[in-house]
Image (cartoon, rainbow, N blue to C red; front, side, top):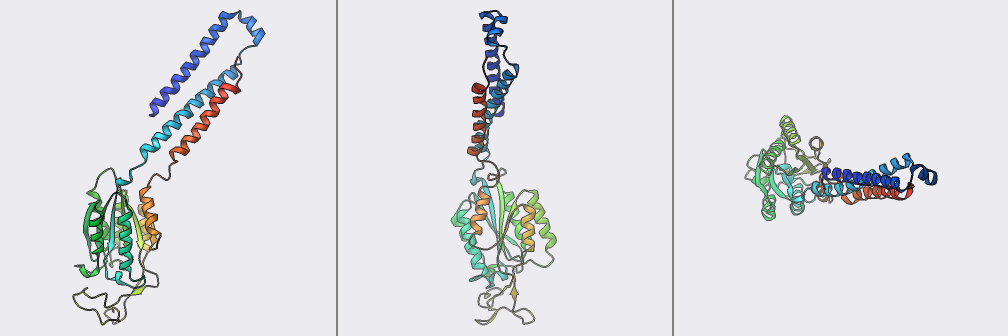
Length: 328
């Protein structure tokens, strides 16, 4: 029921109530001399008459809001299928670290599979290393999205590094090509390591996402203690074996490379865009999927709850008008 229709119904009911009062008064005047009636039944109380009018008006208005609130909640609930999400996956060398079992990359792939299966609407896939790459535009083809997500590996990266800002920029480009009247979000899975000197680009990408109302949900992969990269796992990164089996990747000084979760920038990105930051665990996928599927709905009262409150108020007001206030 539209607000204008509710107002019209209230005005109509009050008009009918006024007509009924006027008719009762005319009939009372025809029945006998008013002085005799007042001596027999007393003067009609103006206060009680006013209270009955107020109770009637409150009851009708509450009834109208019950109907209006019920329909409004149904109209405002967005179809989960209107969601558009881009998964941004990390393909930098540090994803081969062993501080998550068996590696960060394996955990990332497992989480990506879960997101692709659970997220409603259309999904795009972007990955980044030295720069961002679009693997898949927005699609409802879950098999294709899964195939692209599982292909992400440092061995196929054309440019080394960890340019998170470039990955986010590519994701925003993908979302920009989607439908206008849809909710848009980015889910980025990374250890937070970024190329030196990238903070300005990261700030620009974050500000753009915020201005375009795109939530960024970040999932941290790794631990604060850090992990090492197996030389065998690093085969193919530069077209050759990084070291013998059982050894670990070393830097230019011959020291074993230890890579750690760096979550400061991830927390800032999520905070500035209205998203969330969570370290990888078994509950992260259902938490984020639930938030994205119900975005903007969980903060509103349910249609049943709002309608029940107004219906109770309407019943009490109409009951008071009909039975509490004495009729003259």
